[in-house]
Amino acid sequence: MIASLVPPCQSLCDIGTDHAYVAIYLAKKGIAEKIIAADIKKGPLMQAEKNIKAFEVSDKVTTRLSDGFSAIAEGEVECCIIAGMGGETIAEILTKEKGCKYFVLQMQTAHRELREYLSTHGYVIEKEEVCREGNKMYTALLATRGESEKLSETEMEIGPYLIKNTPPLFYDYVRYRLYEINSILNKIGENKTEKRSRYEGLKAQYENLLKGEEK
Image (cartoon, rainbow, N blue to C red; front, side, top):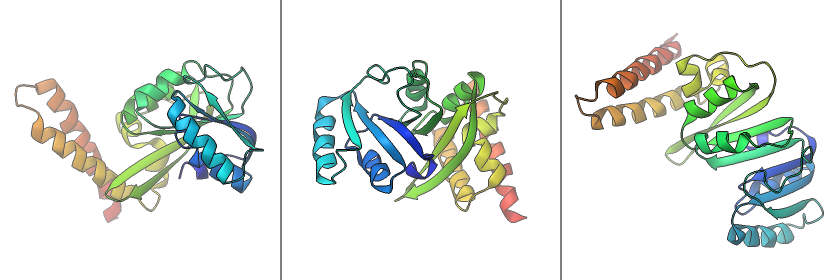
């Protein structure tokens, strides 16, 4: 899913690459010519280097010890991938980005916080994807620099592109998020009225989205 959002480019960095599987895939497919597989930890980078050598893409993929963009030069890469992190962490990393044109982002949590950051800091969400792995569902997005549009609460939570285009797994994803909301509501005490009110509002919005499936 993440790789499908990456546009063909000359240079790319994968922030938090872990074992460099996405970087290796992109190199093998010829989607990017020069790839920096970056991670903040030496352990994953050592494994990444072994994988890069094993898959014979050392001519295209190099590793770099980097805290976010700290070891990436200004204008060095066209595209960055930041995946497998919380939305707030991704937003923090983006505050120090180095002149990328494309941003492929996959948040594990804090969906709303990341999309709110993008919509208020000069980013445009060009595309979003959703996938299922086991009993979990994930989304990822492609953003570019541009004139941001104001997003509704539901759009920040679920994704404006997903809501507009309703891809095949869209309604399954809304049900998945609705299940999460119901689980949270079951744990919130009646005295936490402000928090409960917010999640009840989200529940109503998700249920409204599911009405589109019935049409």
